[in-house]
Image (tube, rainbow, N blue to C red):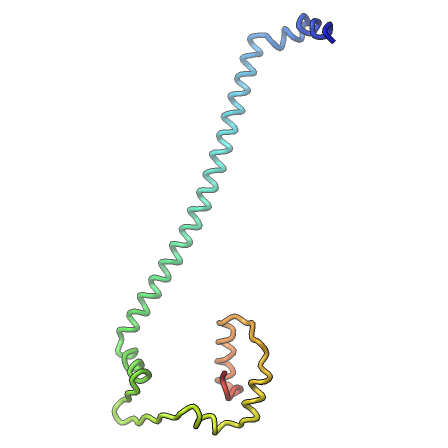
Length: 151
């Protein structure tokens, strides 16, 4: 083994490996690899930052839409139509010439078919639909007269 090492150091292959021209080539190769690695890492970092920017821009757009929606609601709350509606619901006011009839829940329930009301309540399975879907189905049933008693 020792003889093999001595032969290697004295051999022609060692002289080629340790030749100053080849050592310069090795150093150049290491520098090129380091620059390539740095470039790849920079590109990867830029890509990740662009993804973050895209997400933040989408969130910004959503927040702008929410702000616009709130501004529209605020404008609606300032209209005479909303004020009239709020006065009718909250204060029980009416327009001139209108009469308001207040019916208690007990009186209203007396005039509903109890068999149908009990059947509707008893057969109602747990509802796992989304709120929007439930709302649309409730409106459809209401408009078609399918539901007489709402829980």
